[in-house]
Image (cartoon, rainbow, N blue to C red; front, side, top):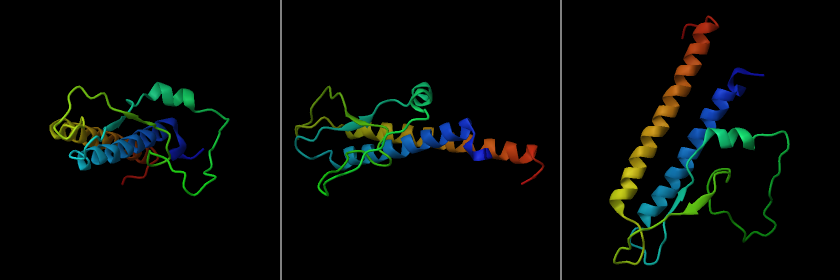
Length: 134
């Protein structure tokens, strides 16, 4: 087992992919803020415990059998986009509030940076422990 295959690195990589997927959905929400009838989407909150249970030796993959089939989520599709609960509607008839979306984007960016920093520091600690002072 390589150092990067350790569970901590796998979990942090998965968390960073979740943030990247969420950033894409939030960007779609902002881009469609004035689209009539558009309903925003967001990802379910990331949970490390759920991801550990999902990891098993068995795996199932899906295949698009028709070229017109497509997936609504980006990346590997394992995070599952879901419709947002909209409590108020804008004059355009959608539930996107730019202020709320920008707050989500900022929070998501800060969480991604924290995961990235933790990943980098973990690699640095392992390198020092192995005697590679870089």
